[in-house]
Image (cartoon, rainbow, N blue to C red; front, top):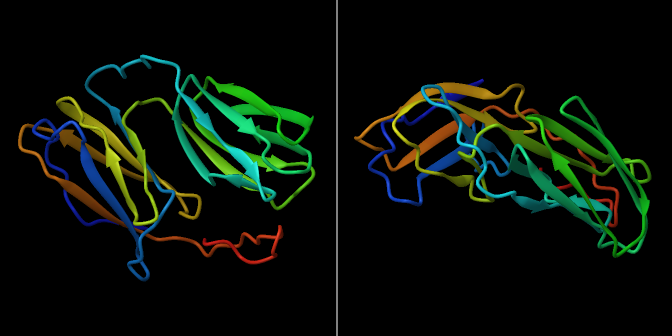
Length: 210
């Protein structure tokens, strides 16, 4: 269950930096990092990417960093190996099935993500390694930081499908919103999260921050 705490008015009067979105946990009100907030236009076509975006997910200390990456369709993700061991990255996700066979420390491989959807990453050698790529059909998105905040880009006038995704949420939060001349400066959401069951087994064996 997710609760919308701040009603969205319009975005048109907002400055170029867009609208601040804050996501908190329903149970204790703590900020939620790694939530992906996206807005897909309903009244006009989605603008195509102007440039091919490039993101990076490194392997460091036998973990993927960052844990969650949000990109637009058509973007390239680089996978540099900054460990001292080999990795074998793979995904069986419907939106993009691929694997990067054993590659050495210091090497970098790249993958283009040409379909929208959720990508789960794993490593065939280190089975505790896990990360997510959210491939979006829209350029209007943000990922929340440690304070639970992200900046959603300013939106042209019209209706949008707002979606909030988090790896521990039972399902995405979906809300129709309207961009109108009278704007709000921020949005705040409370999202129910499932318990974190990830266990960090390298290099210290301690649990993650989730």
